[in-house]
Amino acid sequence: MRPHPGVRAALLVLLALAAGTWQSSRAASRELAVAGARIRVDFEPAAFAGEGVAVLEWVGRSADIVRGYYGRFPASSLTVRIVAESGDGVQGGTTFAHPAAFIRIRLGREVSGRQLQSDWVLVHEMTHLALPDTGEAHAWLSEGLATYVEGIARVQAGNRSETDVWAEELHMMPRGLPQADDRGLDHTHSWGRTYWGGAMFCLLADVQIHEHTGNRAGLQEALRAVLAQSGGLSSDWPIERVLRTADAATGTTVLEELYARFGDTAVTPDLMGLWKSLGVTPSGSSVALDEGAPLAAVRRAIMRPR
Image (tube, rainbow, N blue to C red; front, side, top):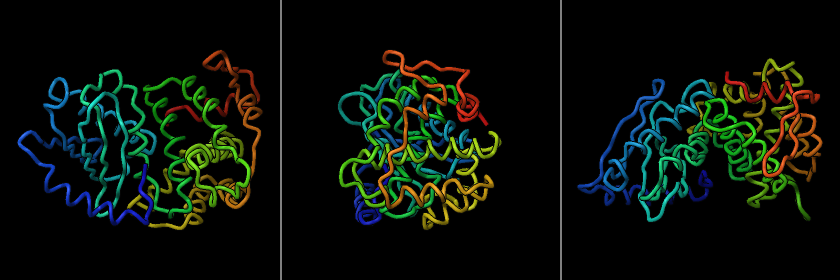
């Protein structure tokens, strides 16, 4: 999750105030190096099993997954503050880029190694660092990208199965379709439209870019170009500049054309037809992959590590 611009300043003040009281005799800072990026982890090692060794491995693994997708980690330095809470699992996070890259994440004291190995939250939060701030009206792009990229990046890194990602999309992405009174992605800010409507936009863009370029490029190459030219979340870019930069990197106009359709208008694409063309069909609680489907090569190219 990324805070809306209207509340960012207030949150930063609260974080600054909290920083003065957070430190205790139990708190510690550890520094990790991931492909040239410095990641400082502030946490209480004694709050977790094994003095937090698995927690540090989780942070490093998540950063490496994001680095793999973007070709580099999207910030030269990052502070990850882990707040220990009751219970287990990864309980949520928030990402900031001003005055420096900072992620605050809540982690259950009883979190298991298996939960950390399969976690999506920290990869999602780190992905936010790669996109310029395009403003509150376009939160669907930031959250949709993070939702969509998380699964693919983890597949490319060997941290998640391809069938698991497609099964989740079949189950969750229809929640991103427009409902009654929808006025397009820029004007309809429900949870479903913001996260899964944005992810749907990204899926459509990824498939179309691959089709237009004969699988030479996809959304991944477009996003790498945006990161390289903008520096990521620390920059404020209008959405038109983001999409124009992304399209230029692939030699297409896919993203700009999709935005012209989806930004101000309720558009309901045929998701089931698209998945069938990609060779993704429901199979119980999972999916089956048809390698003879018309767009099976596109599906494979999307998931292939770069």
